[in-house]
Length: 493
Ligand code: ARG
Image (cartoon, rainbow, N blue to C red):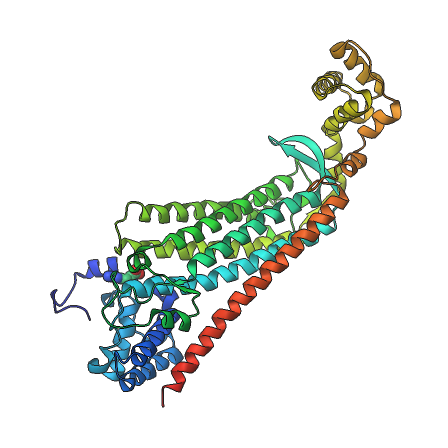
């Protein structure tokens, strides 16, 4: 369509396929039609084209809107969907009128606008799925505020916590991810239309009108920036990559905990597969794939960043290579969040096993040291050394934590501090009691049942507020779309 003027009539076939974005562009078909509609309405209102020509073009665009992308010829020779749509319009109304559609616009502002419109909806859908995951985690957490399990640092058993406290840790992280997605939406909601190739236009267009018709909050002002910027996409992919990294940590822990060695959770059958040779196997395949998808997202992010690195202003066709990475990031993350959300809802923890594991690793040692500080009036560092000595001796002698008595502690104190401490057998026992230890940790964000219930309440509220904002944004876009089509129909007769 564009050839035969400056250039020879045909492009090398391989070169044409190599540089065409037609396949990927199917995803932005609808927004591109809407952009053409909004632009034509504005051109006619500003008398840049006549109302009659405007109406003829809108009629053809409306037909395309009704028939869908199948009505288009998606040949790579046409370069991209923008040209395929223009060709369709010219095919209906003729070159003399259809040739006016591209007045005061460029594919450069058009593609940037269409990507933003597509991404806006994708981000809203992603946020909805993520908030559902948060709520699922909280629902499971509510049932397990008393389910004691070992907490780990360095993957070594550390202190007792609860399954609820653990799930709420992830819910908190995912809620931050939702906030990042929401911030990415904000940055995406700027309209580049009217920037044209890079330097705007001498026609007296109305950029604000077009932005409004397309449901954008603001015009993206600097015309060079408007066509050359993809930081909104980088921000979106970053937010999704971070989210996937968080999700992969959860997936990894579920894999570990469902192993025979830990045996603390049972993977629901529907989210596992078996082996083709080993009949006893139950493989945690969903969590494994989710774990690996995080790697794919990191790849999308590095790829997109690398496309942008040192790319001169404003438009270069390099930008076309970034777009599929963005859609891959969106699709992979959405699938991962949805399936992991279902898995989490069906997960079966094993409370008895969890408690046994928590008991085994001297996990209350910190609590005992704290008790020495409070009751015996010694410095925490001294208490730390004394309890450490007691544990070392117990391990040497093959004594389990529940076999320890006050005498063991006093022996360690004599050795480390050169004296015994003021402590009763009852006090000693209560410091080793898992339930009391958890109960005592009631600071903000701590694992005590009361504290965790409070955290759940706060997170539920925060998720609800996010959902409200998300819905309002979705409604605003929907409303703008309806209004645009109404404006088009009004001009058809
Ligand atoms: N297919 C292009 C893309 O996806 C659209 C803009 C092309 N602009 C150009 N001057 N060739 O980015």
